[in-house]
Length: 72
Image (cartoon, rainbow, N blue to C red; front, side):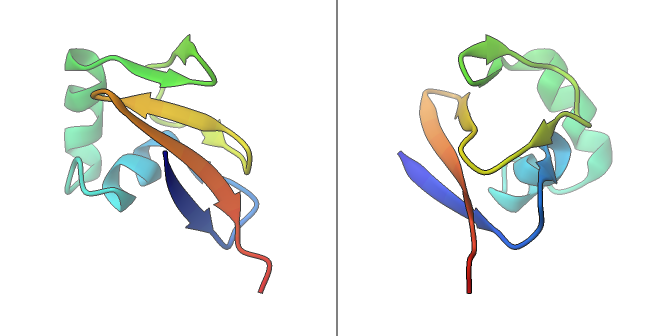
């Protein structure tokens, strides 16, 4: 499981996809979510504005990620 560290309270699913380099622009996010299954905490998710908080687990293309809060 890859840990993704954020400094803010949350990150949106669209920002997350850009952060892990699966898409390069916001326009690609919608297309990606339409054509790929994304699971947030084991539930299918297709809203690019879905807020991801520390502790959330995301599965995309058989890769697992966990959101971690930067406490420094």
